Length: 276
Image (tube, rainbow, N blue to C red):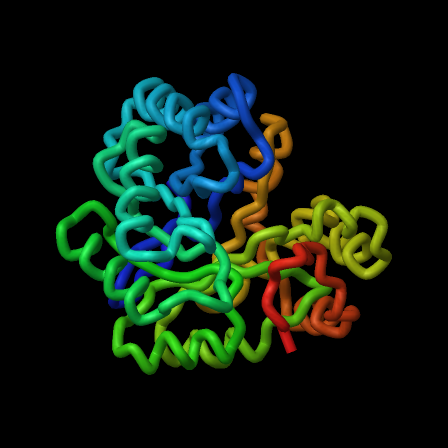
C-alpha cells in the first residue's frame, strides 16, 4: 500500500501509474501487474484511447490482489474540444463504460481551450461530483492565469496535473496550489528518461545506492502536495519507480537538484497554452 496525501477534497496515493501511450493487451497486463505489486493509483484519459485496455487491467489487478474498487484511485480526463456541458456528460459516460467502472476518483479537464466556457465546464464537473459519478474534480495543463479564472468561478478543484520534473520549474503553480490544498500531479516526472546520464543525479544516486531516475522521482516525492505519475510498462521499471517512495533525500541533495536548469519542457503540442 503506497502512502497517501489527504486534503479537504481528496485522498490520493503519493505515486501513480501513468498509462500514455500504452495500449492493447500489454497495457492491460501492465496495469494489472502495477496493482499487484502495490500501485493504488492509475491515470488515464479519453484522448489516450487506452481506457478499454486499462479497464480490464484494473479488473484483473484488483481480483488477483484481492482488493475492492475502493482500494484503487482512478483518474481520467475530458479532452479540450469536449467541454460543452452535454459533451462532458457524454465523455464521462464513455470513459466509465470503457473502464468498466461506476465512478472515477478524479476527473480532469485535460487541456484548456481558448473558446471554452470555463464556468459552465466546471459547473458540469461539480454536478457530476454531486451525483457520485466523480469523487473529485480538477484541471490539467492549466497556467496560473487559468487557475485564477478557476478560482473566480467559486468552484474548488482538488488537483492540477502538469509536466513537472527536476529540469522544469513549476514554482509559480506550486506557490498558488499549496495554500489552497490543491495537489499537483507531475506527469513526465523523469523527463522521458533524459535524466539517466545527468551527473548530478548520478552522484546522488551513488550516494544512496539507487538509480538516477529514482532520485528524480524521490525529489518530487519529497515535496509537499506533489504526486508523480510515471509511465512504466516494463514490470521491472514499475517496481523501481515504486521503490523511490523509500528514498529520503537530504537538504544537500534537494538543493543540488534544485540548482539544475529548470527550463526543459518535454511536452509541447501546438494547442498548448502560453506557459509564460
